[in-house]
Length: 299
Ligand SMILES: [Zn+2]
Image (tube, rainbow, N blue to C red):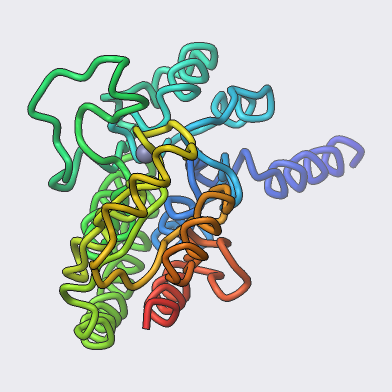
């Protein structure tokens, strides 16, 4: 009798334990947009750890112990790649000793590998050019068509890693694709009047958004990528945009507003702070609302 109750107890613990019967697939997402997309596709079959929030500049993060702990138990890592996370991701991967998620492994998705990159450099990068991304611009998530590509990649990868839930991942992807395709049509329509409009940006964070909407960045507040704005460069920008019909200065939640404010006053151009990613403002609670809000603010 005692043996039986012990058996029942053990069984109960095993069933209750997430590492046994209902083990979820652990996903390490470098940024909120990838965590949000993984959630759409993974649903209740995955546990997601998102390494950064919308107020953090992902170029400049540190390989903290909390990130390392999450990396150790990850089954799948989803990041932008193309050197965006070069300052911290390789350190984490190296220290974690988790073979499955090393770059090129089944548990590694570097989103930039799956979409055509913009701003690909023709010349060889060197340090004098600032903090450039030599493979091309890695900030790919602000073209919703790229999000759609990645939803397929993530569904396929999750199906490989966790074959028993493959049908759930595939059906989540199909319903995501259906609603997302409709949303893109609506955004294309809402944004059609933005075609040809010019903006000033802080960093080349908006290249894919602008390319999608047919807009143009005529200047960056950064003198070189990753180098903060300075007085002489801002004066140069002010000169460069003189006579141009610049709609706004675009900045992300984590970018310093000082330079933008100076230019905004001198040139009489509004600053538009866009969410940049999920959580970038109160309205942007998921990918859909993030794009809704972005279009709304650009109106
Ligand atoms: Zn960048």
